[in-house]
Image (tube, rainbow, N blue to C red; front, side, top):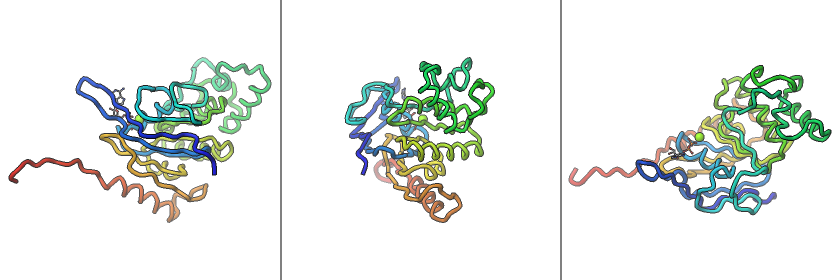
Length: 258
Ligand code: ADP
Ligand code: MG
């Protein structure tokens, strides 16, 4: 059994706003093994992005323990790759230069790795293309290749396919699974799409808001590639849906004497 790579314990995060303190994350606990693909799902405002930013080291103002390979996360580093909803490419650089970034394509090992990654994200032939010539799905694949070139220990994806149409989205899910099966990169994948969470995840972390907390973690032991039309897939999807429908009503004070 692989060791826990990422360990989150008793993580609390609050924001001070003019209208008061917002508890964004309330006692989050999560252990992720090397090579796991975890999907995190929940309605808007439940703290998914906040959690991912803390793991990425982009927000270090938190309480609790968040450790990657035993080391408390205290800032961004090369071990943590981040994919945003929009690909954030440099418009004036070609695909291969966007992927290489500050690494030189003149170095044979870098050139070789970039070529391999372009093939992995299925963009062979587009090495010299510019971002404006790419579709949304292709641009996002460039962003994924760029993150993978740095061999991150964990890849953090915040609704990476949220801006794509349904067809592109399901293609991208297949590309991502292919990458995961070949590289076994540990991934935390945030989505608010139930189908996507069940299609991709080894485990689905379900979160709820006010305050943001983990409601349940469900292991999905269906083999890949998963068949959306299969009864077992539909049952699991239904299970997750039902879980969210059990709304946790806040205690309402109706006042005395009613
Ligand atoms: P999600 O990604 O699940 O939609 P977020 O992590 O973005 O949720 O936000 C969780 C909660 O924290 C929300 O109530 C949001 O309004 C609040 N929040 C997030 N970022 C900030 C910020 N910079 N300042 C104040 N409140 C914030
Ligand atoms: Mg978000």
